[in-house]
Image 1 (cartoon, helix red, strand yellow):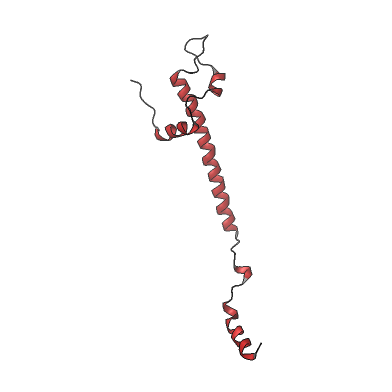
Image 2: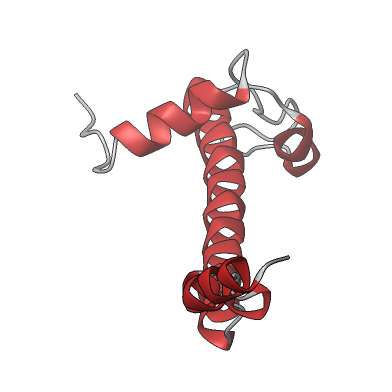
Length: 105
């Protein structure tokens, strides 16, 4: 390498990216990702709880878990096993769109 080339390389040495500064690995990023994963987990957990509650509510309203022995009562084991709609997303959609309870006619 000639002296001219060496001087040119020294001039541009300051503009070269430093490998140790290419990635920002701070604790702020870890807090943000941790909070995002935590909130996503809470949202999924609440959606599952809403689906289960709406499934049981719909089973009670439609009378699918009526106790055959005691009139006006319901079967607790049936409530844990019943599928009152075809798919889980129907329960989620109904629960998300019907916030206020419906008034009986």
